[in-house]
Image (cartoon, rainbow, N blue to C red):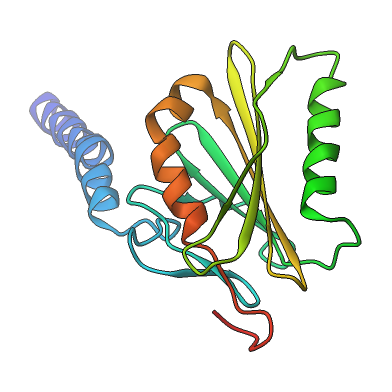
Length: 186
């Protein structure tokens, strides 16, 4: 009787070890082999709004909390990039940038050092204005893209280190933005 009881205990313990090992080794391996549903295809155009698209670099993912009806949030290596839907604005590009500069300078919790505003164009020739603020720990950059009819705002927040590592990549991504608001698609 004792031998049967001992065999039962050994069999039960062995079965438990197999179950635990499958949770520790097998399931994570299966999870790694499945594609991440939030990962964006680097180098391929991604439609993030009605009539607006961007070409993300490798490694960017959608934040699952994005509310695609209002904004899209992309994340990578400590940076958070928020893209709005195109909107009608009564303010000029310069006025929108000045409001952002004033907001950063009036922030009493963070001592922002604000760069000079920068103007450039997307690859499609659409006007872009950029305002960037730096603090010892973080960076906040805002881009306003205006096609003459609508404005699209992009906000990037994150660590100073991530900003230094991914700044050129961000610049290329902003330049890749296409607003095809008259045709309803990019």
